[in-house]
Image (tube, rainbow, N blue to C red; front, top):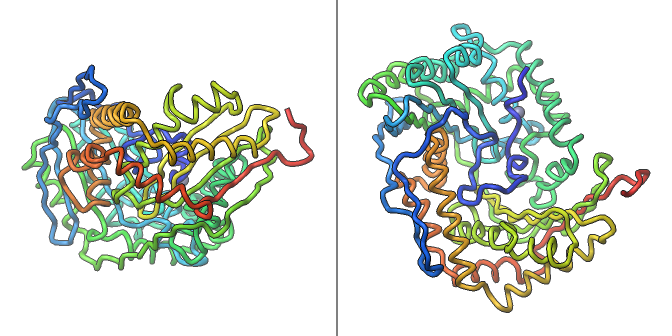
Length: 478
Ligand SMILES: [Zn+2]
């Protein structure tokens, strides 16, 4: 069995690779994606000159809603014979109640268990050259498929069929099977993965247990084991309703025919009320400032600094993407230059703004053997102090912002990513001016707005949480 639907959420962000869009899916959409459409990058010789990206990156779309409340966007692009079908549900671990943690993710797995009409979704899809995946995060569960254009009707049928009929086809056997897979995923991705336990402890360190983000997306073993068939069907009936979903269809198709197909297959799903939105309180300080985890899977310790940060698409969110690159991207970035090259204290460094309806800014470092974690931590904090005292140079800022713009535009070349990012932008910003509106967040950032964010977040020591992972004691240090 392919291990494709690994849980995302925080784990997906371990690499902190994607600066621009915080809403990264767990696994990149299919390789069968497309080369460029109309975006061109031009190099600017003047470091002060900011937007390097041409303006013609608008993505034309058509929008409509079905009577049952499903919102639909068609992003037509006939440059390659490929289509993307991307469905977002406003349900994630934020919606889980005590005793039911891990439910949104478990349910995502069950969506691949087939229905009476399509008993094996993957087989049908892959036989035609398509591929699919899904991800579950705190805020959202999304399903995405990329396939040759001649599979459009099949893919729309598959998505609508499981949306309409999954609960009818659910059995104890299917639940038990996916429960085992999810428990195994929990072991492989978190419990037995080097440093993986950090992600299990981080939510409780940052948020009170009553907060919607106060438990890990993967859930507790106890809760996953306790899930019953009735729980699953209730969950489906509450959250998998058209008014709680948004469908984006992208790629090579005829708009009128596609609209008719969407109406035919998705229009039969009954109308039900949209579930109440969960409020996500914004916090400034963590519940616990310092924690040490002993890990039998590691030989080197690791240091993780955490800071509550502005919610996705709020003021400061784009600035923190820029800051993470100034700190941790490339040899000349501040932390990498100082800690890896100049002082040779660390073997590995990454930073990132993990954005959601509540966000966290993370700095992660592995020391070189023999370097105490205290030394590493003090050096990282000294760089924050330098930035607070001396600011960011306009060259440094311009260079970083340009590289983010370039990465932003580059990822739009993939129709699968474009469809997913469109959905993300609509989900979080309730706006359709993608990609221009999203890109403007970076274009409108300045050294001053960045420094304001830095001062807000890094001045007060009480805002910081620190997790250290140390090798379990009876092991030898390298
Ligand atoms: Zn999973």
